[in-house]
Length: 357
Image (cartoon, rainbow, N blue to C red; front, top):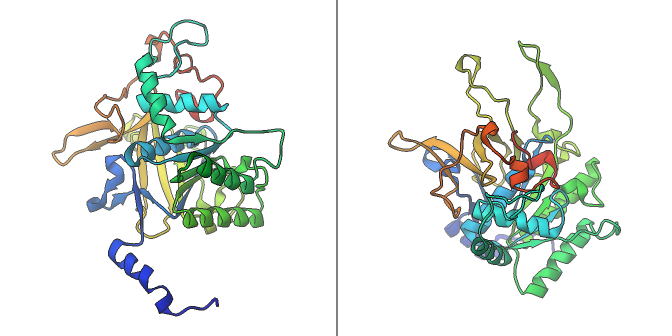
Protein backbone atom coordinates (compact mmCIF):
# COMPACT_ATOMS: atom_id res chain seq x y z
CA UNK A 1 0.00 0.00 0.00
CA UNK A 2 1.41 3.39 -0.99
CA UNK A 3 -0.51 5.70 1.38
CA UNK A 4 0.48 5.19 5.01
CA UNK A 5 -0.69 6.59 8.33
CA UNK A 6 1.57 8.07 10.99
CA UNK A 7 1.95 4.87 12.99
CA UNK A 8 4.10 3.32 10.27
CA UNK A 9 6.66 6.12 10.59
CA UNK A 10 6.41 7.01 14.28
CA UNK A 11 9.60 5.24 15.36
CA UNK A 12 11.68 7.05 12.75
CA UNK A 13 9.88 10.30 13.56
CA UNK A 14 10.94 10.04 17.20
CA UNK A 15 14.52 9.47 16.10
CA UNK A 16 14.34 12.65 14.01
CA UNK A 17 12.86 14.49 16.99
CA UNK A 18 15.75 13.48 19.24
CA UNK A 19 18.64 13.67 16.79
CA UNK A 20 17.56 16.15 14.14
CA UNK A 21 17.02 15.65 10.43
CA UNK A 22 20.68 15.94 9.49
CA UNK A 23 23.51 13.48 10.02
CA UNK A 24 26.23 16.15 9.81
CA UNK A 25 29.50 15.74 7.96
CA UNK A 26 31.39 18.83 9.11
CA UNK A 27 34.58 20.09 7.52
CA UNK A 28 37.71 21.42 9.24
CA UNK A 29 37.61 25.07 8.22
CA UNK A 30 36.80 27.40 11.11
CA UNK A 31 34.95 29.80 8.79
CA UNK A 32 32.66 26.97 7.67
CA UNK A 33 31.55 26.32 11.25
CA UNK A 34 30.55 29.75 12.56
CA UNK A 35 27.00 28.90 13.53
CA UNK A 36 26.71 31.84 15.94
CA UNK A 37 27.51 34.19 13.04
CA UNK A 38 25.16 32.47 10.61
CA UNK A 39 28.01 31.17 8.42
CA UNK A 40 28.30 27.44 7.96
CA UNK A 41 28.79 24.86 5.24
CA UNK A 42 28.73 21.13 5.82
CA UNK A 43 27.57 17.87 4.33
CA UNK A 44 25.15 15.28 5.62
CA UNK A 45 24.71 11.57 5.19
CA UNK A 46 21.81 10.64 2.90
CA UNK A 47 22.65 13.80 0.95
CA UNK A 48 24.42 14.70 -2.28
CA UNK A 49 26.66 17.67 -3.04
CA UNK A 50 26.56 18.92 -6.64
CA UNK A 51 29.72 20.95 -7.24
CA UNK A 52 30.37 22.85 -10.46
CA UNK A 53 32.43 25.56 -12.04
CA UNK A 54 34.11 26.89 -15.15
CA UNK A 55 37.20 25.13 -16.57
CA UNK A 56 40.42 26.15 -14.75
CA UNK A 57 38.57 27.25 -11.61
CA UNK A 58 39.61 24.38 -9.35
CA UNK A 59 36.58 22.06 -9.19
CA UNK A 60 38.61 18.88 -8.79
CA UNK A 61 41.12 20.52 -6.46
CA UNK A 62 38.34 21.69 -4.13
CA UNK A 63 36.67 18.27 -4.37
CA UNK A 64 39.94 16.60 -3.35
CA UNK A 65 40.20 18.98 -0.39
CA UNK A 66 36.73 17.92 0.76
CA UNK A 67 37.63 14.25 0.31
CA UNK A 68 40.76 14.67 2.41
CA UNK A 69 38.88 16.45 5.18
CA UNK A 70 36.19 13.74 5.27
CA UNK A 71 38.95 11.15 5.64
CA UNK A 72 41.07 13.12 8.12
CA UNK A 73 38.24 14.40 10.30
CA UNK A 74 35.75 11.52 10.19
CA UNK A 75 37.79 8.51 9.10
CA UNK A 76 35.57 8.06 6.05
CA UNK A 77 36.05 5.36 3.48
CA UNK A 78 35.75 7.10 0.14
CA UNK A 79 35.32 5.64 -3.36
CA UNK A 80 36.39 7.87 -6.25
CA UNK A 81 35.41 7.68 -9.89
CA UNK A 82 37.70 10.12 -11.68
CA UNK A 83 38.83 10.40 -15.27
CA UNK A 84 40.84 13.61 -14.96
CA UNK A 85 43.68 12.71 -12.58
CA UNK A 86 45.52 9.96 -14.42
CA UNK A 87 45.96 6.26 -13.68
CA UNK A 88 45.16 4.67 -10.32
CA UNK A 89 48.75 4.89 -9.04
CA UNK A 90 48.87 8.60 -9.87
CA UNK A 91 45.65 9.25 -7.99
CA UNK A 92 46.93 7.44 -4.91
CA UNK A 93 50.30 9.24 -5.03
CA UNK A 94 48.44 12.55 -5.39
CA UNK A 95 46.39 11.88 -2.26
CA UNK A 96 49.44 10.71 -0.32
CA UNK A 97 50.88 14.13 -1.12
CA UNK A 98 47.73 15.84 0.15
CA UNK A 99 47.97 13.91 3.42
CA UNK A 100 51.58 14.90 4.11
CA UNK A 101 51.38 18.30 2.46
CA UNK A 102 54.44 17.33 0.41
CA UNK A 103 54.98 15.78 -3.04
CA UNK A 104 55.20 12.00 -3.15
CA UNK A 105 57.70 11.67 -6.00
CA UNK A 106 61.45 11.91 -5.33
CA UNK A 107 62.39 13.07 -8.81
CA UNK A 108 61.36 15.99 -10.94
CA UNK A 109 60.47 15.34 -14.59
CA UNK A 110 63.98 16.52 -15.57
CA UNK A 111 65.49 13.72 -13.47
CA UNK A 112 66.84 16.00 -10.75
CA UNK A 113 66.06 15.39 -7.05
CA UNK A 114 62.80 16.84 -5.82
CA UNK A 115 63.83 18.67 -2.65
CA UNK A 116 60.20 19.19 -1.67
CA UNK A 117 59.47 15.45 -1.58
CA UNK A 118 58.40 13.55 1.53
CA UNK A 119 60.85 11.18 3.21
CA UNK A 120 60.66 7.39 2.86
CA UNK A 121 59.18 7.14 6.35
CA UNK A 122 56.56 9.76 5.49
CA UNK A 123 55.73 7.91 2.27
CA UNK A 124 55.21 4.69 4.26
CA UNK A 125 52.92 6.52 6.68
CA UNK A 126 50.95 8.21 3.90
CA UNK A 127 50.51 4.96 1.97
CA UNK A 128 49.29 3.13 5.07
CA UNK A 129 46.85 5.92 5.90
CA UNK A 130 45.37 6.08 2.40
CA UNK A 131 45.19 2.27 2.28
CA UNK A 132 42.63 2.45 5.09
CA UNK A 133 40.43 5.08 3.49
CA UNK A 134 40.63 5.58 -0.28
CA UNK A 135 39.46 3.36 -3.16
CA UNK A 136 39.86 4.39 -6.81
CA UNK A 137 37.80 3.19 -9.76
CA UNK A 138 40.07 1.60 -12.38
CA UNK A 139 39.05 2.85 -15.80
CA UNK A 140 38.48 0.74 -18.89
CA UNK A 141 38.06 3.16 -21.77
CA UNK A 142 37.66 0.35 -24.31
CA UNK A 143 34.49 -0.99 -22.71
CA UNK A 144 31.68 1.53 -23.07
CA UNK A 145 29.43 -0.41 -20.69
CA UNK A 146 32.02 -0.46 -17.93
CA UNK A 147 31.79 3.20 -16.95
CA UNK A 148 28.01 3.46 -16.92
CA UNK A 149 26.28 4.66 -13.76
CA UNK A 150 24.74 1.22 -13.28
CA UNK A 151 28.12 -0.48 -13.38
CA UNK A 152 29.74 2.10 -11.09
CA UNK A 153 27.20 1.20 -8.41
CA UNK A 154 27.63 -2.52 -9.13
CA UNK A 155 31.41 -2.20 -8.72
CA UNK A 156 30.88 -0.16 -5.54
CA UNK A 157 28.84 -3.01 -4.02
CA UNK A 158 31.39 -5.54 -5.24
CA UNK A 159 34.21 -3.61 -3.53
CA UNK A 160 32.26 -3.43 -0.27
CA UNK A 161 31.84 -7.22 -0.32
CA UNK A 162 35.45 -7.91 -1.30
CA UNK A 163 37.06 -5.59 1.27
CA UNK A 164 34.32 -6.17 3.88
CA UNK A 165 33.72 -2.45 4.31
CA UNK A 166 30.94 0.12 4.00
CA UNK A 167 31.63 3.24 1.97
CA UNK A 168 30.82 6.59 3.55
CA UNK A 169 31.09 8.60 0.33
CA UNK A 170 31.16 8.13 -3.43
CA UNK A 171 32.75 10.88 -5.53
CA UNK A 172 32.04 11.12 -9.27
CA UNK A 173 34.41 13.57 -10.97
CA UNK A 174 33.14 14.49 -13.51
CA UNK A 175 29.60 13.30 -14.11
CA UNK A 176 29.81 13.97 -17.86
CA UNK A 177 32.44 11.20 -18.19
CA UNK A 178 29.97 8.59 -17.00
CA UNK A 179 29.36 6.77 -20.28
CA UNK A 180 25.56 6.81 -20.22
CA UNK A 181 25.23 10.44 -19.10
CA UNK A 182 23.94 12.89 -21.69
CA UNK A 183 23.35 16.61 -21.08
CA UNK A 184 19.64 16.37 -21.83
CA UNK A 185 16.89 17.36 -19.44
CA UNK A 186 15.42 13.88 -19.02
CA UNK A 187 18.88 12.28 -18.65
CA UNK A 188 19.97 14.79 -16.01
CA UNK A 189 16.72 14.08 -14.19
CA UNK A 190 17.27 10.30 -14.37
CA UNK A 191 20.91 10.44 -13.27
CA UNK A 192 20.48 12.88 -10.37
CA UNK A 193 17.39 11.03 -9.13
CA UNK A 194 19.43 7.82 -9.06
CA UNK A 195 22.41 9.46 -7.37
CA UNK A 196 20.25 11.05 -4.67
CA UNK A 197 18.42 7.78 -4.05
CA UNK A 198 21.65 5.78 -3.77
CA UNK A 199 23.11 8.25 -1.26
CA UNK A 200 19.95 8.17 0.84
CA UNK A 201 19.51 4.40 0.86
CA UNK A 202 23.21 3.75 1.51
CA UNK A 203 23.58 6.42 4.22
CA UNK A 204 26.40 8.14 2.31
CA UNK A 205 27.39 11.73 1.62
CA UNK A 206 28.15 11.66 -2.11
CA UNK A 207 29.79 14.33 -4.29
CA UNK A 208 29.13 14.90 -7.99
CA UNK A 209 31.27 17.29 -10.06
CA UNK A 210 29.99 19.03 -13.17
CA UNK A 211 31.02 21.81 -15.56
CA UNK A 212 28.89 24.89 -16.07
CA UNK A 213 27.62 25.94 -19.47
CA UNK A 214 29.13 28.87 -21.32
CA UNK A 215 28.17 32.03 -19.43
CA UNK A 216 27.65 35.56 -20.72
CA UNK A 217 30.60 37.96 -20.99
CA UNK A 218 30.83 41.63 -20.08
CA UNK A 219 33.46 44.33 -20.57
CA UNK A 220 34.79 46.26 -17.55
CA UNK A 221 35.73 49.96 -17.51
CA UNK A 222 39.26 49.09 -18.65
CA UNK A 223 38.00 47.22 -21.68
CA UNK A 224 38.77 43.78 -20.28
CA UNK A 225 36.32 40.98 -21.08
CA UNK A 226 35.14 38.85 -18.22
CA UNK A 227 32.52 36.19 -17.68
CA UNK A 228 29.54 36.54 -15.41
CA UNK A 229 29.15 34.08 -12.57
CA UNK A 230 27.22 30.97 -13.53
CA UNK A 231 23.70 30.67 -12.16
CA UNK A 232 22.32 27.58 -10.46
CA UNK A 233 20.51 26.43 -13.60
CA UNK A 234 23.57 26.85 -15.86
CA UNK A 235 25.32 23.63 -14.95
CA UNK A 236 26.07 21.30 -17.87
CA UNK A 237 22.76 19.66 -18.71
CA UNK A 238 20.42 22.51 -17.88
CA UNK A 239 17.84 23.46 -15.28
CA UNK A 240 17.26 19.98 -13.90
CA UNK A 241 20.67 20.19 -12.22
CA UNK A 242 19.27 22.83 -9.92
CA UNK A 243 15.83 21.25 -9.64
CA UNK A 244 17.17 17.87 -8.51
CA UNK A 245 20.31 19.02 -6.67
CA UNK A 246 20.35 18.93 -2.90
CA UNK A 247 23.36 20.97 -1.78
CA UNK A 248 24.65 22.85 -4.85
CA UNK A 249 27.80 24.99 -4.91
CA UNK A 250 29.79 26.90 -7.51
CA UNK A 251 33.61 26.98 -7.40
CA UNK A 252 34.93 30.27 -8.77
CA UNK A 253 38.36 31.89 -8.94
CA UNK A 254 37.73 35.65 -8.95
CA UNK A 255 39.96 38.12 -10.77
CA UNK A 256 42.75 39.23 -8.38
CA UNK A 257 42.59 42.79 -7.11
CA UNK A 258 45.03 44.55 -4.74
CA UNK A 259 43.59 48.05 -5.18
CA UNK A 260 41.00 48.94 -2.50
CA UNK A 261 39.68 51.75 -4.68
CA UNK A 262 38.92 49.29 -7.47
CA UNK A 263 36.77 47.11 -5.24
CA UNK A 264 37.06 44.27 -2.78
CA UNK A 265 40.59 42.92 -2.25
CA UNK A 266 40.99 39.55 -3.97
CA UNK A 267 44.12 37.42 -3.46
CA UNK A 268 45.82 35.73 -6.41
CA UNK A 269 45.33 32.31 -4.81
CA UNK A 270 41.71 32.90 -3.77
CA UNK A 271 38.87 30.54 -4.61
CA UNK A 272 35.28 31.38 -3.70
CA UNK A 273 32.67 28.77 -2.83
CA UNK A 274 29.20 30.11 -3.72
CA UNK A 275 26.15 28.43 -2.20
CA UNK A 276 23.50 28.03 -4.92
CA UNK A 277 21.00 25.70 -3.27
CA UNK A 278 20.48 24.40 0.26
CA UNK A 279 18.68 21.12 0.81
CA UNK A 280 18.00 19.78 3.35
CA UNK A 281 17.45 22.92 5.39
CA UNK A 282 20.27 23.68 7.80
CA UNK A 283 23.07 22.03 5.83
CA UNK A 284 24.55 25.38 4.78
CA UNK A 285 23.96 29.11 5.00
CA UNK A 286 23.67 31.13 1.83
CA UNK A 287 26.73 33.19 1.00
CA UNK A 288 30.28 33.09 -0.35
CA UNK A 289 33.06 31.21 1.43
CA UNK A 290 36.59 32.17 0.32
CA UNK A 291 39.50 29.73 0.67
CA UNK A 292 43.10 30.07 -0.49
CA UNK A 293 45.42 27.66 -2.30
CA UNK A 294 48.83 26.80 -0.86
CA UNK A 295 51.02 25.49 -3.68
CA UNK A 296 53.57 23.73 -1.43
CA UNK A 297 51.00 21.44 0.20
CA UNK A 298 48.50 21.62 -2.69
CA UNK A 299 45.85 22.13 -0.02
CA UNK A 300 43.57 25.04 0.81
CA UNK A 301 43.69 27.28 3.86
CA UNK A 302 41.47 30.02 5.28
CA UNK A 303 41.99 33.57 6.53
CA UNK A 304 39.94 35.22 9.28
CA UNK A 305 40.02 37.29 12.46
CA UNK A 306 39.51 35.34 15.69
CA UNK A 307 37.44 36.46 18.67
CA UNK A 308 40.38 38.59 19.88
CA UNK A 309 40.63 40.35 16.50
CA UNK A 310 43.87 38.54 15.66
CA UNK A 311 44.42 37.79 11.99
CA UNK A 312 44.84 34.11 11.24
CA UNK A 313 45.60 32.02 8.20
CA UNK A 314 45.49 28.30 8.76
CA UNK A 315 44.81 24.94 7.18
CA UNK A 316 41.76 22.90 8.13
CA UNK A 317 41.99 21.78 11.75
CA UNK A 318 41.98 18.10 10.74
CA UNK A 319 45.12 18.26 8.59
CA UNK A 320 48.31 16.55 9.76
CA UNK A 321 50.21 19.81 9.22
CA UNK A 322 47.67 22.17 10.82
CA UNK A 323 50.44 24.09 12.65
CA UNK A 324 52.37 24.78 9.44
CA UNK A 325 52.01 28.34 8.18
CA UNK A 326 50.58 28.49 4.66
CA UNK A 327 52.73 30.28 2.10
CA UNK A 328 50.49 33.12 1.15
CA UNK A 329 52.99 35.15 -0.85
CA UNK A 330 55.04 33.30 -3.48
CA UNK A 331 57.82 34.89 -5.52
CA UNK A 332 57.91 32.56 -8.49
CA UNK A 333 61.25 33.97 -9.72
CA UNK A 334 63.02 32.65 -6.61
CA UNK A 335 61.81 29.07 -7.11
CA UNK A 336 64.39 26.87 -8.83
CA UNK A 337 61.79 24.21 -9.62
CA UNK A 338 58.38 25.16 -10.89
CA UNK A 339 55.38 23.89 -8.92
CA UNK A 340 54.60 21.60 -11.87
CA UNK A 341 58.13 20.19 -11.70
CA UNK A 342 58.18 19.94 -7.92
CA UNK A 343 54.92 18.06 -7.79
CA UNK A 344 55.45 16.08 -10.98
CA UNK A 345 51.95 16.85 -12.16
CA UNK A 346 52.50 17.33 -15.85
CA UNK A 347 50.13 14.45 -16.59
CA UNK A 348 47.26 15.97 -14.67
CA UNK A 349 44.87 18.29 -16.44
CA UNK A 350 45.66 21.96 -16.08
CA UNK A 351 42.00 22.43 -15.19
CA UNK A 352 42.56 21.95 -11.50
CA UNK A 353 46.21 21.41 -10.69
CA UNK A 354 48.02 24.29 -12.37
CA UNK A 355 49.71 27.21 -10.64
CA UNK A 356 49.24 30.09 -10.51
CA UNK A 357 45.50 30.44 -11.01
